[in-house]
Length: 266
Image 1 (cartoon, rainbow, N blue to C red):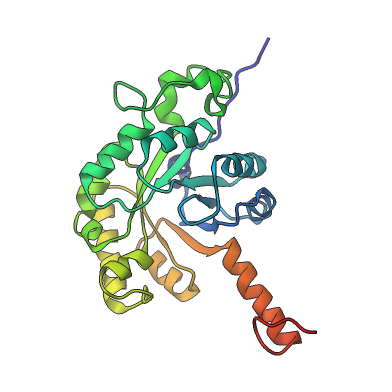
Image 2: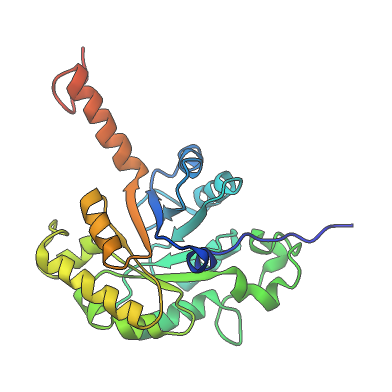
C-alpha cells in the first residue's frame, strides 16, 4: 500500500513563520551540483533563474531534485508571464514561483490564474502525470493545490512602483520582489541601482506592498545596501549569486597569484 506523500511548506509559509528576514541567493549556472552546494550552505532560500540563467525545464527539474534533501526553499523564476511554461514549471514540482516584469494589477491577476486550477484559474490538470502531486501520491492534491503553491511577482519598473499597492493587493499574490537593476533602467539610470532616486523608489514600493499586508523582498548584492533594505522592512533578500561568487572569487585568486585579473598565470 502506497503511503501518502507530504510536500514541504511553501515559501509563503516560511515567511509567515519566520521572525527575521529570509536570506537567499540566485542559482543561475544551470548546474544541479552547484545548486546542491548552495542548498547546503545554510541559506534560507534559492532562486533558480529561467529568465537570465541557462535553464530549461530539464535543468530546473534536476536542481529541484538536488536541493530537495536540504532545509531550503527553492523559488523558480519563469522567463515571463507565460501560462503554458508556468504550468510545466509547476508540474515539475516547483512549489514557489516568481514572475518577472509585473507592472499592473491586471498582469498580477493573470499570474494568479496561471498558477491556480479551475474555477479560480486556468492551470491545466495533469497531476497523475506530474511530479507536482508526486504522481497522485499527494492526497487530494487537486483540491488543495493552492496550499502547495506560492506565487511571488517582481516589480522592476517605475510603472510597477506606481502600481505596487494594487499589485500586492491582488488575491493570490503572496509577496513582491523588487528588482532595482531594471527599475534603475526604467528611470533612465541604467547600471545605477544604488542611486538615491532608485533606492527611494524601492522604498516607495516597500511601503506600498507592506501597506497591502504582503511581504516584500529585494535583490542587493552589496552588503551595506542589503542591510539598509532589511532596516527598511525587507522580509526576504537575495544577497548573491552562484555565478558572481565564482567570477569574483576566481578574479581574486588571479589577482593574488598572477597579478592581473582575467589573465591566468603561464
